[in-house]
Amino acid sequence: MLSLLRQPTQTLDWSERFKALAAGCKTPRLRAFYEAGAVAADTPLAEVPLLALDVETTGLDASRDAIVSLGLVPFNLQRIRCGEGRYWVVKPDTELSSESVTFHHITHSDIRHAPPLPAILDELLDYMAGRVMVVHYRTIERQFLDQAARLHLGEGWQFPLIDTMQLEAMLYPKRQPNWFDRLLGRKPVSIRLDDSRKRYHLPPYMAHHALTDALATAELLQAQVATHYSVQTPVGQLWS
Image (tube, rainbow, N blue to C red):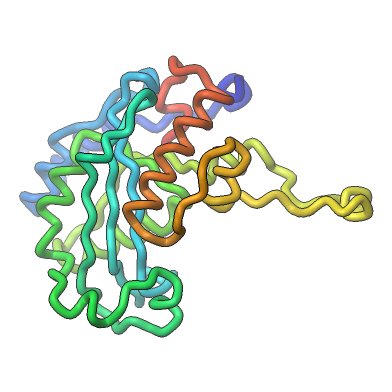
């Protein structure tokens, strides 16, 4: 099992970190999120409450771009609860660009009457509380939600997550073909969401829709665990 190959020098203890964050948090809404706690690092994956998360943005720079939609789907290793999923289109703090509209297909008319992000933050915090987030490429979700909390709550936002892209990167550390592989016509290994799903024979979905991408990420983690890990793998070996 791959889990045996990854022996971190120090396992993150999000349970203890949340206690410290709650003690120092000045914002009641964010403090309640931390006080809900996090599972212990030695909790088996089979027992972890998971929440697939995807955000679509106006660009890739959290310091100047903004969130335009969010999708969340709760699940565990046996079941994805699609009926309990959440999806929001929100009015970004910055203008939509033609590039972002082409990318996620959210237009000016879609956001005209959409709520601003602060209007859904309470529900978002409540929904994420006590769960481990699952994302594909953690930089986007982590940086944009942290920046949003700084702007609208006055404090940064931290939470544990499992990154399915990072799990694929661990499987394929040498993704660029060498000269002999190139001679044989072999292509680089892609760890993008849709390409990663193909390796597990998962069905294709429309990309860059926050709710669909959240579902796709949940399915990918289930397939990764079923193929490469034990359901008894401690969550602390996979989260960051």
